[in-house]
Image 1 (cartoon, rainbow, N blue to C red):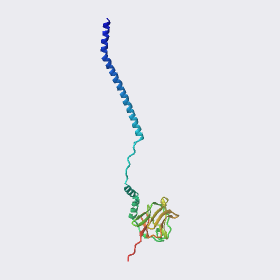
Image 2: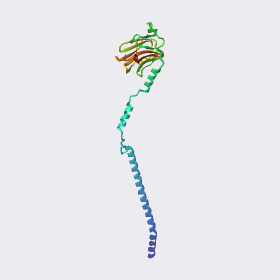
Image 3: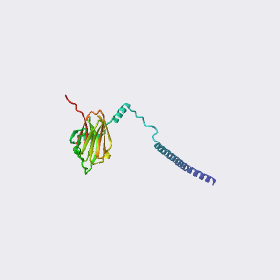
Image 4: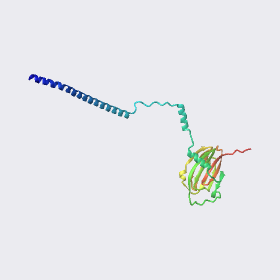
Amino acid sequence: MLYTKSALRHQLGAANGPMLIGVSLIIIVIVIGTIASLRNNADTEEATVASNESSMQGPAEPPPIKTVDMQATAVEAVAKTAPTMPATQKSRNDEMFARDQGRVLPLKDGLAGGSEASNKPAAPASVANAVDAFDFGVLDGRVRIGVFGKSSIPDYRATVSKNEYLIEMPGQFQYVEEFSRTLKIEQFGVLSARIARDARGMNLRIAVSSDLAHEPFLIEDPHGLMVAFEPRRVATP
């Protein structure tokens, strides 16, 4: 009987041995897999944190230094800073010299037009003439200064001195204050021009230098008055 129990126990142990080994191997594989998975997750989290820190801090290395040709740069800078006439000034010059004009009269002391020429005081105008522009233009050595409005300025009187040309224009004028500023010309002996309101209407004052080498003319423009300075004509023998 004892032999029979011992033999049975031996047979059971022999039968359970491979099963225990298989179970142990399965447990070992599961443990190794779990450890590997945890390690991979930790590595992924570390890589994500490092990537975020890198993106927040910007590139670790500075950008490469770009070489500059100083000679070419200097030429380009000069080209960019070279003074050029604005397109608006060009258009004003072209318009002032190309516009239709009325009579062109030599500008001398005492030159008058309209009621000023007849020495009869001008009757107050029922409608004020709106001053739309006050500007000057320079083209081919010529200088023009213009006061422009909705209609012509028929009444005027000129007073000429060595350093100033004064054109008085009686009547009613609007928006004179808006254009009451000094235009700095300073070309060919013409220094500046200014319009202003006075007791009778408005006046135009043009300052010139003593070395002015131009002949002055008054132009009766259909929409105002212009003073033109033209190069003096050289008499041919």
